[in-house]
Length: 512
Image 1 (cartoon, rainbow, N blue to C red):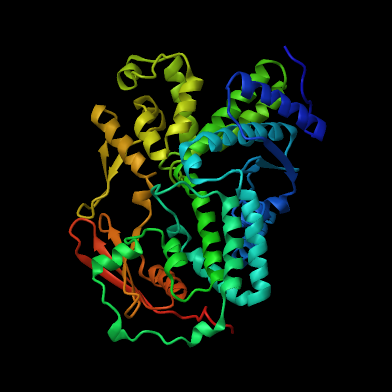
Image 2 (spheres, rainbow, N blue to C red):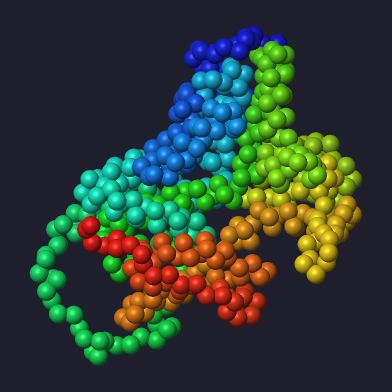
C-alpha cells in the first residue's frame, strides 16, 4: 500500500502536483493514454463564470452576448439557483484544464483525472477532432482574432463591427462544413494569409478604379442556372463560407470577421457530435483512476466516499416519470456504455457473445475502449455498442407518437426486435443530420437582381419556426446586401411547403 498523496479537504500546489504525478502513472502505465501536454490552471468562480460566458474559451473577442450571459449566470449562481462545473477543459495543445479554487482536494484530483487525462486523450485521438480541429494553433488563432476585432472596432467603429458579429453569430450553426471536402486549415497559416491579404490590398488599392465604366447589361453574357451553380460551387451548406467568399458588398475586414466566426464554429462542431462519448470517456477514466488510487492506498476512504458522492450525482439518471426528467443524461449514458463494454470484455454472457462476438471475452477492455473512442461518434457508437443488458438496466423503451391516435403508445419493448429498434431510435436522437435543419444555398444571379435562394430540405414534415426563420434570414440578408428567399421543400417529393423571405434592414457597407 502506498502513502497518502493528501489528507483532508484543503489543497495547495504541492498536493496538486503530487496528485497529478500519481494520476499520470496510472494514465500512462495502466490505461496507456495518448495525451497532449497538460496545463492545469486554478481560477475563481468569477473567472469560471467568465469562461462560461465566452463559450468556454480562455481568449475570446468581445461581444455583448457574452456579457449578457455572464450577468445572467452570476445572478443565478449567487442566488443559489444554479451550480458551476468543477472544471472547463480546452481542446488545445497544451490541453488547458481550469479547476476552481473553491474545490476540495479530492475534487481537484478528480477533475485532473477527468479533464487532463480523459478529455485530453479523447481530443487528441478521436478522428473527428483530428479531421476538423487544430489543437496546436487554436490559442494563437483566438489571440489573433481578439486583436483583429479590437483593431476593427477602433478603425471602423464598434457599432459596425457589432452588427457584423451579430449576423455571423446568428448563422453560426450553419457555418460548418459537415463533410470533409478538405482537412481543417492550419490556423497559424490562416493568420499569415490574413496578413498577406491586407498587405496586398493596401499595395494594390487605387481609388481610380471606381471611375472605370462598368459594362452594360446588354453586353454581358447570360449564364444558365447550371453554369451559375457550377461557377459558384452550389449547392453550398456552409452559409458563412459562401458569404465570406461571394457576398458582393462586404469589405475585406468584414469577410475576415465572418471567417473568424466560421473557424470557431467549425472548431466546436466535433464536440456537438461526441457529447456522449467524450463525457463517457472522461467519466470512465476518472472513475478508473480514482479507484486505483484508493486501491493502492494513495487516497483515503473519506476521499473515496466524497468521490462516489460526486460521481453518482454526475451520472444520475431520473426515471421517465420523475419530475426532474429532461431526457437521457449524456454522462449516465456514456459512462454506462463504457462500463458495459468493460464488463463484456471481462465477464461476457451468452447474450453478449451473440450480439458482440468481436469484443465479448477478449480480456482487453482498455484497448477496446480506446479503439471506440478513436473511431466513432455518438450516433455510430450507440448503434455499434449499446447492448440489450444496458437497455434493460436503463429501462429504455420506444414510444409511438402518432397524431392520429389519442394517446402515446409504447411501441417497442425488451425483445430481440425491440432492442434493435430502440437502439436505432436512440442513435437517431444523436444524429445531427436529423437534429439540425438541412439548409443550403442553391442559386444566385450575380449579374441580375442578386437575390439569394436557399432550400430547407424538410424531414418528417418538420417545418421551421416562422418567427425565428425570419429573424435569421434578416441577418443573412444584412450580410448578403440583397433580398434572401428560402423555400422549405419536402425531402421526399420536392414539393414547396412554405416560403420565407427577408430584405436587408441594416447598411453594413458604408460608414455611419
